[in-house]
Amino acid sequence: MDEVRACDHSCGLGRREFLGAATLSALALLQAACGNAGDLGTGPTVSGGSFVVTLSQYPALATVGGVARVDGGTGSPVALVRSTATTYSALSLICPHQGTTVGLNGTGFLCPNHGARFASTGQWQGGQSTGNLQSIPSTYNASAGTVTVNR
Image (cartoon, rainbow, N blue to C red; front, side, top):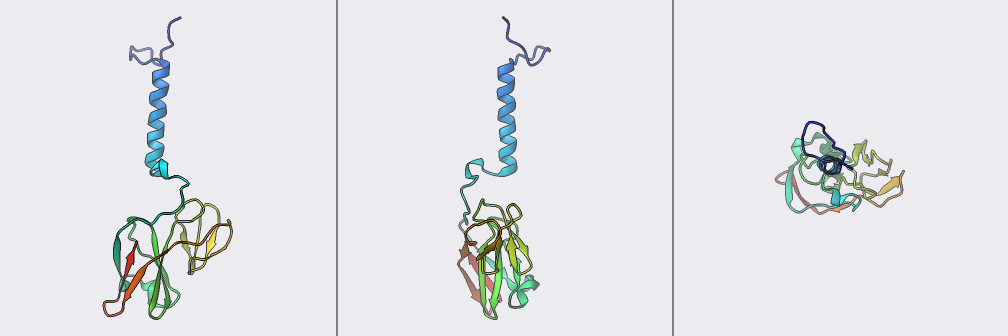
């Protein structure tokens, strides 16, 4: 019996080849949309490198309790929290449950996928049971008005 052709215009693709090519194309699109598919579900990571945050560029950090996303949209998402007049804490915004980027929610953080809530300290407060947000080493330079985040 002749192989059924996916195309009747002499394209030369059999059904099996057509379906294989279509599947590979769909997987490539899925990987492009989701990032590296090999990293799905592996949990949070904070990549290497450090960056300097100029505090005057983030009005929310002018007062104690202020929170701002400071990574500039590059690399792993990072928030800076002003804990006291002279203390700042950097936190990874990657939810420890399944690696979703959490958003700012008042003075804390909220995972949009499963509802996990975190305090401004990164400590889990409720919603989906998970761990705390990962703390990232940082150094405050009062004379320069900057914080160096060492991710």
